[in-house]
Every structure is written in C-alpha cells, then in structure tokens.
Amino acid sequence: MSAGEKTLTPDALWTESAVGLGLLDDEGRFVKLNPALEMLLGASSRVAAGESLTRYFPDMTGFERLFSEHARVELTTRLVPGPGEEKKVWLSLRREETGGYF
Image (cartoon, rainbow, N blue to C red; front, side, top):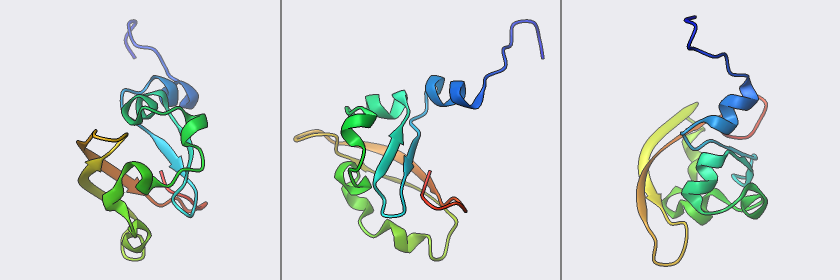
C-alpha cells in the first residue's frame, strides 16, 4: 500500500461508496440503503425501509423467480423514484446464503 492510500473498514466502504448499495429481506423489501442509493432513490433508509424493490424498480416484479436458477442477476432496468421521474440504471442482485438480497 502506498503512503497516499488508506484502508477502509467494511462500514466505511458502505458509507463512502459512490455505488448505490442496499440490503433486501427475503420478500424483496429494503432493510438498509447506503448514502449513494439513498441519493439515487431520493429516499432515506428510514423512508425506504419496508418498501418493496418494485416500488422503485417496477420492472422487477417477480425478481425472486430469477434466483431459482441464478445466484446473481445483472440487468439494465427502470428506476422510478417518484411521479414523472424515470432513469435507466444497471442493477445487480446477489442472493446471500444467509437470506435476503444485496
């Protein structure tokens, strides 16, 4: 490691990442969002907690079926953070052995 590099803890990686990261429960509801995902969705973890993935990504209805054959799913889909708003985003979901999605 060079003198200018710093080591980040897992918590720091979560909070300082420029990539939106979120944890979902087994039903596809948000449990936790990092600041980058909060900014993308326009909602805090507190507001989004308990909301379905499909609330923000309407094309992901039935995403659980994808995991019956694949441990990881990557695709481009629509993000609809609010009325009249729509963005195309790349979404990567990975099933964790402990349950839930990341």
